[in-house]
Length: 151
Image (cartoon, rainbow, N blue to C red; front, top):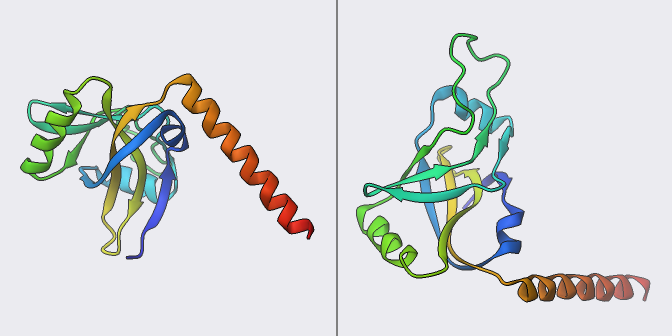
């Protein structure tokens, strides 16, 4: 499965425990697809919300290109509809209603058929001590790798 990852949300992996991952299509305009191909995407603080039985990607920043028609400048942070099956949306709705659960965007990529996809995840927020533990683990891993390189 060849995926061309355009943008990752590293902050989501640090702030949340990822419980389940899903792939969802994104409804985009033509200029937005071109902007994504150019890598003009920022997923920091983006999340998914289910509104009236439909999933929407909120707070994802897709910049428009300079080559875009000057009369058509789409809102860069507009809500974008995610394309999911009804059963998936119902399952996510039930899961999100649980205390402390949320839906976050992990990455945007193009699949092998050149369709823009978003990897979303059902996640639970980390506490401060969990974040500290993650940082300690990263530091130890770096030290181990450095020690192995020296020998």
